[in-house]
Length: 90
Image (cartoon, rainbow, N blue to C red):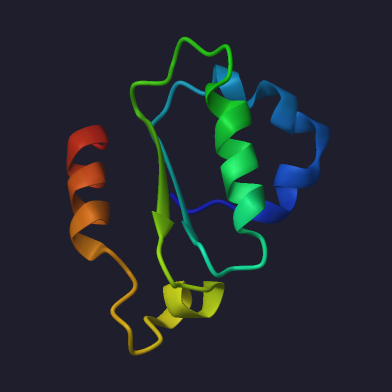
């Protein structure tokens, strides 16, 4: 499932460390909001007993645009996405 990040600014974020489902946060390190993905991930795993299936994936040199359409740079790590889904979406 792909979520809507606009909701991440709402107070509901205070409960992210209770998420039991697998979560892969993926951001390009050249994206202006990369800090936001890093912060959201940190909040999600802080004081959580459900961290084994959480992962932060930072793509070097990629912006949001690169991750939307590949940007001709092969920025989207499809092999990593596939292995994450295969492991946690059984």
